[in-house]
Amino acid sequence: MTSPSHFSAWLEALRLRTLPVSVAGVITGIAYAIAAGGFSLIPAILCLIFALLAQIASNFANEYYDFRNGLDRPGRTGPRRGVTEGDITPAAMLSATYGTIALAAAVGLCLLFYGPWWLILVGLVVAVGLLAYSTGPFPLSHHGLGEVAVIFFFGLVPVNLTAWLCGCPWSWNVAAGSLAIGFMGANVLIVNNFRDTEEDRAVNKHTLSVIMGARHMPRLYALNALAAAALTAFSFLNVFSSAAVLLLPAAYLLAALTIARVMSQRSGAELTPLLGCTAMLMSVFALCFFIMAAL
Image 1 (cartoon, rainbow, N blue to C red):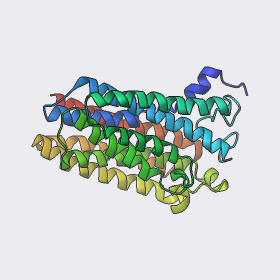
Image 2 (cartoon, helix red, strand yellow):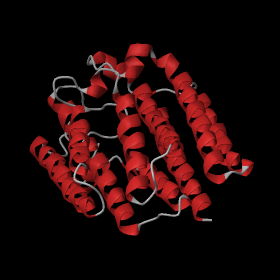
Image 3 (tube, helix red, strand yellow):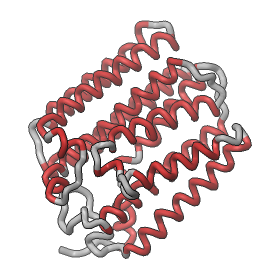
Image 4 (cartoon, rainbow, N blue to C red):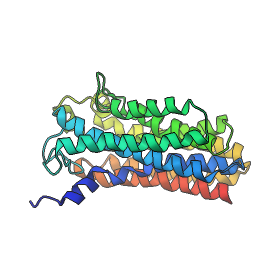
């Protein structure tokens, strides 16, 4: 089989199917700020760039450290691993990882013009978190904590901070929405780990799917979707005071339950499209919320 070009190898390493996860959190935060009448454009743009760079750095780190630790093997199911397959050198991926973290840090420092000094601490937590997902003395993704990390770093942190930096006071409504977005993002990882269960078990990588058993993953996916729909229903009713807003979480739940049902009928590479569908469903939900708030 012909090897991909250098450019396409790096494009694959970005994991484009998963990038809507970071975008959705920021868009949701922006939507809460607009609904509260306190939108600010520059912090919103900076939050979006920071979130994207942080996720890209996490994807690069995951590829490099899984290769270094012998957890990726040539021909694995799912996206082609550029380092493992020899398309990208380990040194280049390591440089790209820390270079992207540096760019994210530079963008984060710009947010100090719009927020307090302790945003530096938040940035440090994010940097440590994206590396701790794949490496360190207790890699989160190797001990069944990947989904928890996603809920925190792609739900709670971006939604609450973006809303606050854009002028929306903290509230339980925003907190509920951030947790819902976290559950939606965790479902992306659930599909990914469900697909890779056997290969992860073979290399002793203890993802949640390996620990719980693959058969439980579609059920967990559905449970997360139900929790996300309930949380957003609570939040939207308090923000908009109209029962019509329940149509959005209801539509999300219907689509997510459909994906969960299809998950239970597929395995291996057949699950890869569902990963992209889950990420896009999450971003479409956030975009619809943004439109509702703008109108």
